[in-house]
Length: 83
Image (cartoon, rainbow, N blue to C red; front, top):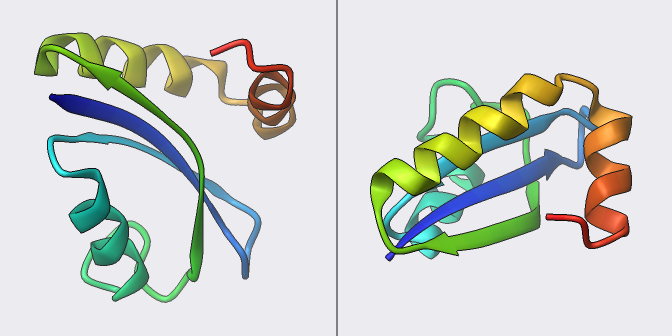
């Protein structure tokens, strides 16, 4: 299984969108400052995770989410369970 996920920084409010085959290990990596893009910006809260059968499906959904670009739009869709 593969996952596309959205986390939000408690310190900056910024979102990070990614995909992985091991969601818990990936979240732990973000929180332990072992990811270059999220280093020193945590702690991170998981806002959304969606499971896919293939990595290509997870990547396509990740790209779709990143195309939105507007943090308020993404959060409003999460709150309305539209993903």
